[in-house]
Length: 421
Ligand SMILES: Nc1ncnc2c1ncn2[C@@H]1O[C@H](COP(=O)(O)OP(=O)(O)OP(=O)(O)O)[C@@H](O)[C@H]1O
Ligand SMILES: [Mg+2]
Image (tube, rainbow, N blue to C red; front, side, top):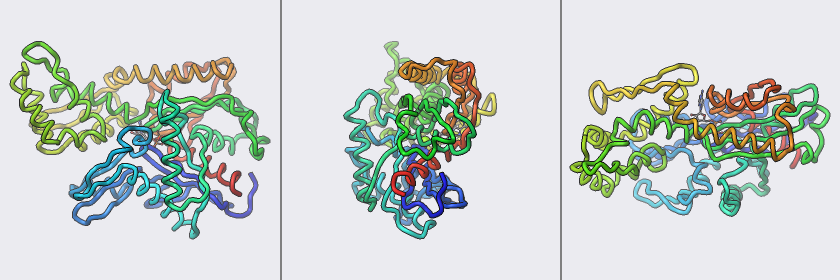
C-alpha cells in the first residue's frame, strides 16, 4: 500500500517463544530492532536475584545460562487461557501474579519499540492465535480480554486483534504479482494456526477483506509440545519414566510430566514432591532411574535439561541424531536422540495438525487441488515430517517459505496502518 508518512500505530506479535513489533514507515522494513539489532525479542524474563531486577530476551537467557541465581520465566503466552493465570508465583520472597508477568514483558516490547520510534504508541493491533484455548470459547474470550486489560494498563488506548495467520497472509501478499489461493501454515512455539485466503496485488488496499478469508483454523499444538514429547520419549525413561513398582504397577508419572513442561519444573523441587519420591523409591523394582532423578533435583537441573531437549529438537531438523550429554548427572550417561525417535514421538500431534488442515479445507468447501500456494512460517514449520505431512495434503500447491520469525509482525504492521492510519 502506498504511504508517505509513518503510521500512528504498531502491531505486536507476542509469541510463545519470540515476539516482534512492526511499524510501517516509508522506505524501511516494518520490523523494529528490539535487541542487539535483531527483530525478535525472545519471550523470556529472568529475575536476577543478585541484582534484584528483571531482564528480558537473549540477555535473560544468557544470564540464566551463565549461572546467575534467579528465576527464568518462559512461554508466558501459554499462561493465557490456563488456570495458572489466576495464580501467582514467588519471586524474591514476594508474591507475583502470573498476569503481571505478561504486563512486564509486553510493557518491555512497547518501551523498546517506542525508544526506536522516538514517539509513544497509543494504538496497537495485537496478533492472536485462532484459538488460545481449544474447544472452550469462554476461556478463549477470557484469554483475549486478559490481553486487552494488560494492554490498557500499559497505556495503549486503542487495542484490537488480528489472527496471526491472517497477518502472515498480508505480509506474503505485499510481495506477490498475481492472484493466488494460499494456505498459510504458522507453526510456532505454542500453537498451529492456519488460514485459507485469496490474495492479489489489486486487493491489498481494500479496507474490507472478509470475503477473501475463506477459513481460519488451528490447534493448540506447538514447539513446546514437541519438546515435551521428545523429553518423554528419549530422556525421561533414563530418569525412571515407565519404571515398574515391585507390585508390577507402573510408577506414577506426575514428576516426569512436570519435568517435561517448563512451567511445572519448579513443582518437582518442592519438599512435598521430594518426600513422595523418597517414599516411592523402596517400592520400585529397579531404582537406577529414580536415583538419577534425585541427582537432577539436587542440582536443580530441570530447566537446563529442558533447554537441552529443545536444542536437540532444533538440531534434528538438520541432523539424523543429536545426543544429550548427561555426565553431570552420572558419568557417561547420554540420551540418544534421533530424528526417527522424535518423529514417532510427535506423530500423534502431527496427525492432529493434519486433521485440522483437512477440516479447514472442508469448512471452506475448497478442494485440495485448488490451493495454489502453501506458505510456511513459524519456527516449528521447519520440522521435516510436519512440513512433508502438510504438503502431501495439497498436490498442486507450490511451497513458499515465509520469514520464519517475522511474517506475522510485518503483517500486523500493515493491519495497524490500515486501521489507525
Ligand atoms: N529449526 C527448527 N526446527 C524445529 N523447531 C524449531 C526450529 N527453530 C525454532 N524451532 C521452534 O520454534 C518455536 C518458536 O517458533 P516461533 O518463534 O515461530 O513461535 P512463537 O511465534 O513464539 O509461538 P506462537 O506463535 O505459537 O505463539 C520453538 O518451539 C522452537 O523450539
Ligand atoms: Mg508465532
